[in-house]
Image (cartoon, rainbow, N blue to C red; front, side, top):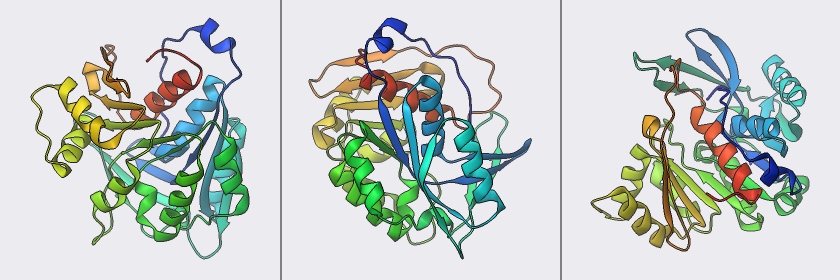
Length: 281
């Protein structure tokens, strides 16, 4: 969930030929307590930061507590050129906090405090207007755990010009089922992104059992109808199918892994930035 900075190949001519895309991300604002320190994060927040670094007009919508961490989060976002006018303050609720443990492979597990300020994002008029005016809205599933934020997200989803849904399954409070949060928002997306474990999970919901990755994405996209359905594959790269049925794979790059926290968010930002800029998948 914390920031992970990566270098990705890009075509300067393709990006400079068009107006920079505008990307609005909404979701959890939290601090990750990692073995090597405490870091500001949250998947949609990370996407906004990476999008701004790539040159997009990036804005972030969330809620923080009226506390030191909340003020620090807004200050850090502003310093990173992320527009945080849509970050609300919720007195009486604390800014989000997560205990994160890394295993021997650098993979993370999370203990996410509940409730937190970001569970209570209000559908303010300025936020609804932004969803209609930005090139796309980016969100995940974790922010859907709180009913108020979930209600706001459903309203934004109905109005957004384009919508990017990174499934990004995380531990949920007792009594909340991930399918109940994710499935209603799978339809009508510009991009649906998931990892291989999440792909298997969603396939099981629809009783899909294809033999190959290509067939997996093609059959699932017949159900969800995304403009782009993407699965990330760790060291093996990523695969994508679009609404026309075209399929492509990209291999992974060999790197020295420190930890994997936030790597998927940098991928999402670069993918969305490229697609909105007119680059081929």
